Length: 103
Image 1 (cartoon, rainbow, N blue to C red):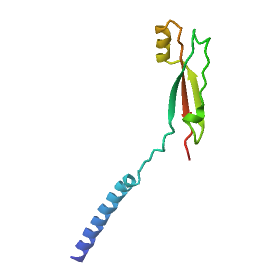
Image 2: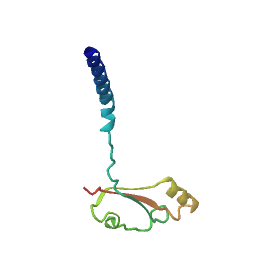
Image 3: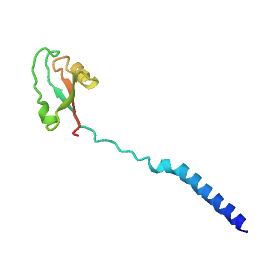
Image 4: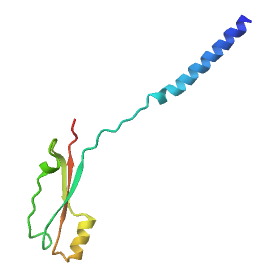
């Protein structure tokens, strides 16, 4: 009778151990995403196919605390469509400012 109880307890412990080993990795899998730094888009005006006109952009207005990590100036599909619609008289450029993330 005692031997039967020992086997029953051993089987229950092995089942509990197996369950713990299978579930323990799932308990520790917490993920967190870091805060994304803001990205701002601006259109800078240009005229006569971009030859005439001047625009200024202060990046400190977009990223006052950490500064800019990356700046991209160029044409996009939307700015090209506007240029085609105005026959090149208004030729905007899109500026994308990626701010640094604050530690």
